[in-house]
Image (tube, rainbow, N blue to C red; front, side):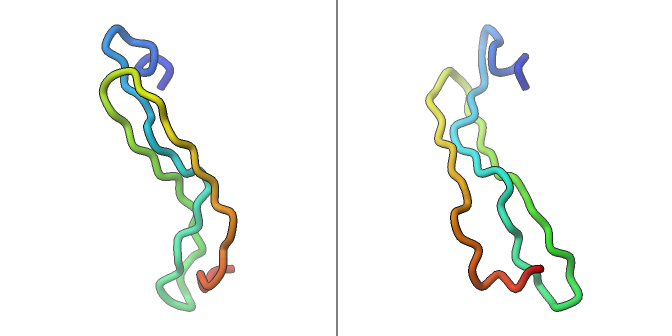
Length: 60
C-alpha cells in the first residue's frame, strides 16, 4: 500500500471503516468482520470512520 500512496501518481484512501460487523444471514451463519475502503487516484484527504454501536446484528 505504501508504494501506491507515495508513488509519482499516488492513490489515496478516501474512505475507510476497519473492523466492521457483517450481519449474519441465518442462525447457523458465521459472525464475520470486514474492513471497507475506497481508493481514488491523486493526493486527497480521507475519512476514517469507526463502528460505535453494534445493535440488532444477530451476531455472536
